[in-house]
Amino acid sequence: MTSKGTKSSASSEAAVVAFELVSIDPTPAPRGSAGDDWLVYRISQGLNVVTGYRCGSRAHVVAEVEQIVIALNERLLVRGRPYRSTGRPPKGPPTRHKDLI
Image 1: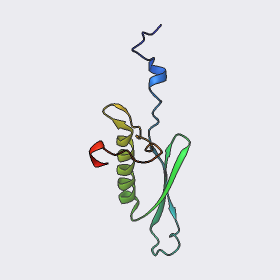
Image 2: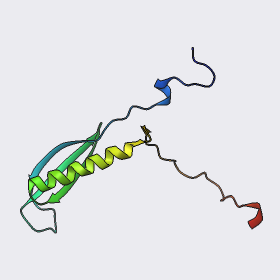
Image 3: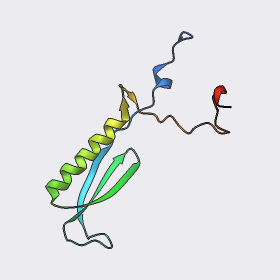
Image 4: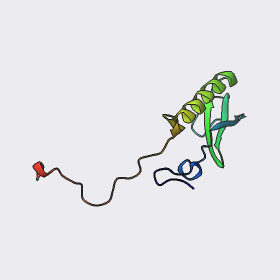
């Protein structure tokens, strides 16, 4: 039984799923782009998949995409807790300070 001031850890913390690099493969240049050294990469977070394209050597693209994955995972944690957006602002007219009315 939990006390009134505490919550169970299962209900207070959502499972955090890290981003991970799934694949980097050669691909034709995207429409309107030149060059024959294009790579397509896929980053996943659970069932979500992000697909992107980079031009350059495989080693250079791997280094760049790994930095992207690191940055995405750093955003997941804020002071040791899962990152959560503050959400949308409340609906309705904006509140004004009493001195500005």
